Image 1 (cartoon, rainbow, N blue to C red):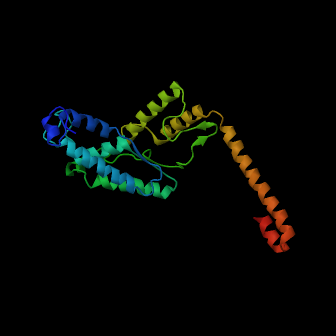
Image 2: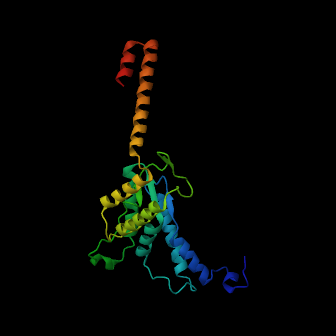
Image 3: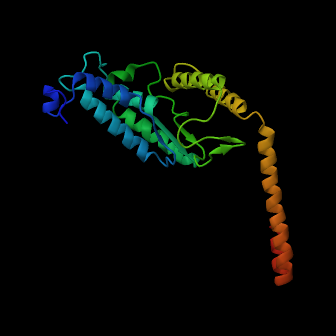
Length: 234
């Protein structure tokens, strides 16, 4: 599509304004893998975003105000701003984080060897262990798209938490345990009745026990006593 005879459009190129807008959008895009595994998708998206941004940064008509970043700093910024993952298995989370670190490490400039500050970011809050299939906590529904119905005060606390996590990512400040406590406080604000969760768990346990007892009574009428004894012990 050719707009208004613009020369860059005739050549299939982007205008300076378009490059500026694309860089802004790509720098703030959010990518989350809800079943992250060992991190293949996150690492792949890191390379894709880096390659596209690098191409835009080095076009002849790129905006002059774009920062001059090396590959290491640009990839670290992409991880900080865009990449997230959730995985049930703890060992897979560790491998996921390790792959992101290695991807950064191979692009680290030699001059950084003399640095006295931590070079690699903290990824504890980028790839988390959890079950992404859980959509309801207590009576609070978290939709697949959009946002949960949260109060302005809670949204403000979440914004503050995001800022604290960003500082933690860059090793600027913050304690991992303190950030976890901030998360827990927000969780209690969202769902202030944790006792109900415990009661739900106790109810599920009672139902399982009732089912086992019922199964034992049925089995005692159909099978030999040794088998019934095994069911009862289970």
